[in-house]
Image (tube, rainbow, N blue to C red; front, side, top):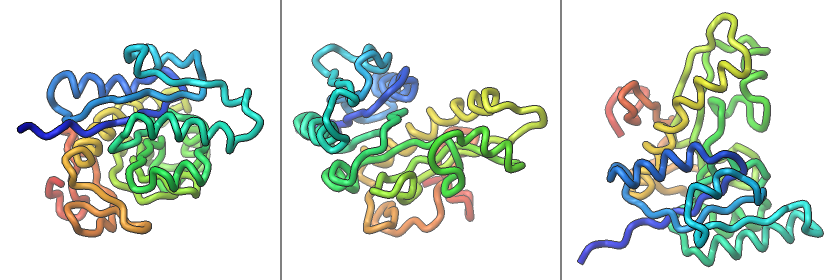
Amino acid sequence: MPQPLPRIAVLASGRGSNLQAVLDAIAAGTLAGEIVGVFSDKPAAAALQRVPAELRWSANAKAYPSREAFDAELADAVAAARPDWVMCAGYLRILGDAFVERFRGRTINIHPSLLPKFRGLRTHARAIEEGEREHGASVHFVIPELDAGGVIGQAVVAIEPGDTPDTLAERVLGVEHPLLLAVMRLATSGRLAEHGATVVLDGHPLFTPLRLDFAGRLTDPASGAPA
């Protein structure tokens, strides 16, 4: 009897390009999973239109009396979809502690910097302003502290002379999609877990984030061996 596909809930606030990359990979048979809901704090978010109406949930967070009230309703909606994994893909609200703890160990986020550098916003501009030579994206477990969870994998791009935040953002977006897909393959195949603050891969602690190579594979940066 075939095993049920891993269930993926997606949180998104914007256009949903990372969501589309996941949908395309599922359709192509290169990612084993099922999108069971797309959840947004912005009812007009284009990401919602990428899935059928029955998979959409949205609410205007500003209409709620408190951040906690919105997060509680969001968490109930996500829980109703019975996800194995919760993927934050361009979700622009900070998740409250209660939400994070409810889905702890199965919530991942993609962030446009080489964490722990440049947590929070304006990552591309800050990298240029501080004279960095490299920039990129990270996929990490979500914990209550912003952008501070264990980093699973990273993709690196060079910062070129004359780069602006917009040109750098475009190149980083080009590596975000393959990075997210590579990490999701580890997650949905049962190879990935979180133990305390530590990323666990195949039952062993991962002390250094994996790196995405030119072929779109995650490798050990020390040995170059594929994950």
